[in-house]
Image (cartoon, rainbow, N blue to C red):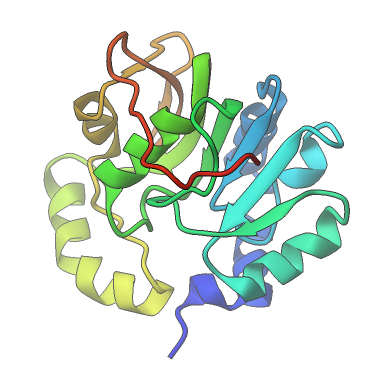
Length: 206
């Protein structure tokens, strides 16, 4: 059985409703701050792609049905079938990586963040919108809901402590970019000096 994240029309419907408010403004911020060669990580149905300059972005997602939907939104954008934990790009290929509600769903967060750092060029940035584990009662409720929620959605974990994961992976969050609304976060992060990863042989240009 597919989760909600793997049913493109249903996924799009839910996001379209949410984007009438804060999420829509944050998505505009997410894409609007991209600079240079951009990787749209976990593009889903490609909702970031029309907001990016034509020819500037490569999109990656692990689900073929999502990429087919993304193709309708951005016919010229290169679309790559791959997981965040194993990106088929050379070291330093991108100036910006976008992560819009992605890190909640990857199987291995440290591996995905390691790959993000590897494909970022020196001085590159990760721009993210994510939901995180709340405090006290909210966090406890998320913990209780997590197994069922993850099964229904097809992978989303509502209780991940993503900001802590970023710091532990060697990424430094820009305090000026960070905005918090309930369990939602908007932020920009850069690899700390000395934290960049190197790739095994066999990576390819975007």
